[in-house]
Image (cartoon, rainbow, N blue to C red; front, side, top):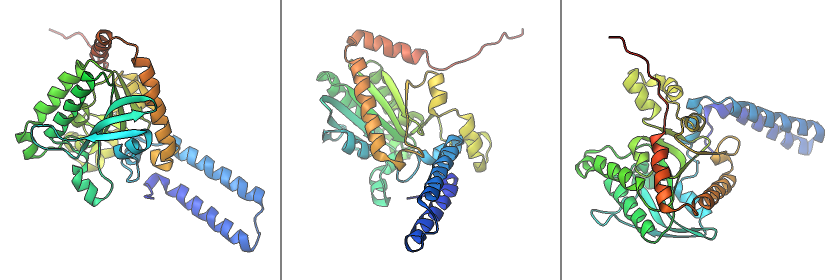
Length: 321
């Protein structure tokens, strides 16, 4: 498993402890009590390191190569899944996975952004950066959900919508704006979950919902820390400063009313114990559905409208004439 910079002290301690245990098999120099104390110190070290993470270090956890992606959640939280393809206008966008799903006893229309896991799949998925046809596909499926009274579940994990010329020629901005408009008035419950990166309009294109949840180490921002640093400071070494300034992690966003729920990850991140993460996400989805299913469509839409109207905080000061 890839080791992040802040995890190196933990790895060194783990390797030392493993060597001692191996040596102890042939020559018992350490008692079980002493080894047990070392294991407790290892747990304390992990808790100490992970409780003092800086925003930029949490970004590295969010981008960890072994972090579960949308395809992993689909495989592990869905009892059934039938994928649907294409936008009926241009082509199928592989950066967006969508289809009919059953989670527990409830049917959903599930849409997720997929990044890929190795070179071949990342190229196939365009690194999780959707084209306009991806957003059009997502909206086609959402309309299908509304027609058959199915709740919508979206999984956000993207560094942003694809910024290339081909995407702009096919109406990237319009496709995202249209999704914002249509999702705001979609007459069926919409649950949004950020499982990794939630960057700019690429995330917003499937991000308008009744309840918005985030995994503990995911982030949601108008721009990536690298992009922010290059624009504001013209200095790529300011990434850590930008990550702190953007206030893009769950504890900041829940205070601003941007999101509603935070799902705790296993110690060190979702990649440390994917099964525990899948169980927590499944629980979040089903509990949220229980809250939303009895709300009449007219009230659901009004609540959604008010939710987005109230987002954020601002201050005003008198201006001098």
